[in-house]
Image (cartoon, rainbow, N blue to C red):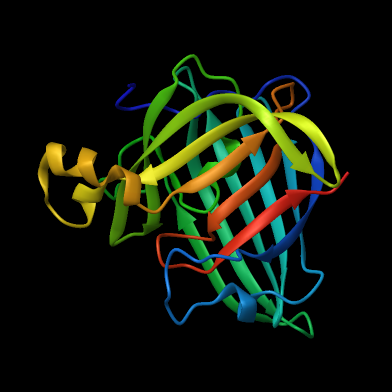
Length: 233
């Protein structure tokens, strides 16, 4: 395992705009008040746009339809010799009239004591498909400035995926949190608990630009609304 992995630099042709269908996850792992059946509206869609801003920066911009309006995010990453590092995040929520009702801005360059391979929890999974040599990696998932959790990513290999009524090849990955960041149980107990830990399941196109084909899991940290996101087209 690479203990302090960085997201790799994106492959050629990564500048894409891809649209997704969003729907509630049929079987929830958590039964909290936050329910994706209430968060999403029938026919909700999402868009991921990757852009090369300049020689030093790339951007991941997202927009998700929700029942009460939309969520938009702009995430800027800096290119380094080690890979990509978080630089800025802007997230806002819009109501059904397009008015801003929530806004969050984060400068990851500020000295907050974060590890250099820290990434926002809802955006990190979307960039894991870019080619990396390691089959198991560890990152830090930023939930807010008071809660940062170590997460592990395992590459399962290529598999067949049913998508849009057809079968396609996909690279499957699983992301899961470190139990010791929630309850100090030690490494042995953490390994024993791994099968029941909440997981994020991801499938990527094995060919460049390695776009997300399907995502299944919480939209956020464990306990967040759980959804399925599938590429259209």
